[in-house]
Image (tube, rainbow, N blue to C red; front, side, top):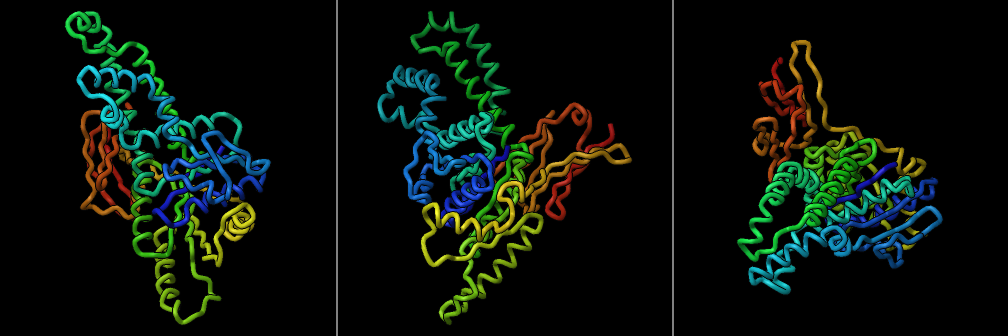
Length: 389
C-alpha cells in the first residue's frame, strides 16, 4: 500500500501532476484512487470529467474522487456540533454566527484526511494519490493530527471524568446544556480517526510526499521551506517534479533570458534536493487535460520508471546509541537556520520549534531518565544528545 501526497505552491500544476501520476499508476497495474483534499477542487477539470464525494471509475484500475469536506465535517463532527450549538443557543448566539464559530480553520481538510485513511485501510486500493491543497494549507493540515493527538491524549480523558462526576450536580444548578456521553463518544471517535491518520502519514514505508515546483525563485524557495517543515513532522519526500521547463526547441530570442533564468533555478533545485529524485517536465504547447493528454504527460514524466515503487524516501528521524553510553536523536531539517530553531526539554517531552511550527516529542522510557546534553544543527540535520543513564 502506498499513499502519495502531491503538493506545491498554488498554480504550479500539482493537480495535473497528481492526475497524470494516478493514471500512470493504474496503467502500471496498481488499483489506484486519486482524491483531492483541496477545497478548491480542480481534479475533475484535469480529467475533463465530473467527480463527487463518492469515488468514480475513470479507467478499469483508476477511481477518482473530490472529497466533500462539508459532508465529512457533518459525518464526524455532527454530535459535537449539535452540543456546541445548544450551548451557543443557551448563550444567545444563534443562526449563521453560531455556525461560523463552530467551523474551525482546517477542520474540513482534516476530516478529508480521515476519508483518505478509510480508503487506505479498506483493501480496495494499492495506491492512493492525494492532490493536496497549496503548501501553506498542506503544512497546516499535516500538522493537525500531531496537535489534536496531544489534546485528545491529555485533555479529553480528564474532561470526561470530571463531567461524568459533575453532570448530576450541574444540571440541578444551571440550565446550561451539559455534554452527554454520546458527545464524548463522538470526540473519541474523532480521536481514533486522527490517531489512525497520524499512523498512516508517519509511516515512511507507506506515505511520502512528491513536490511540484516551477523553475522560479519564489516557487523554489517555498519548496525548500516545505521540505524543511515536512521533515520536522516526520514526512519524507520521494521526488521533486520541475514543471513547465522551456524545451530547447523554443529558441525565439524573446525567451533567451528565460532559458538562462530557468537553467539557474534548475541547478539550484538539483543542489537543494540532492537526496531525492528530480523529475523535469517540459512546458507543453497545449493544455494537458483529458485522459489521452494526461497519459502523454505521464509518459514523459516517468518514462520507464514505475511511478510508485520507482521512487523511495527514507525517514528523516533516527535514534542511535554511542559507545560512551549517550543517545543521539537525529532529525532531518534541510535548509533550517539556527536563528529560527529552538529546542526545549520540558518534563517527559522535547519541544522543537522551527519558525511558526512546533512539534512535541514524547520521550520513550529509555530517554526520560536522561538529560539533554546539547543540540546542534549541521548539514541540514538537528542532532540532540542525551547523556548516559
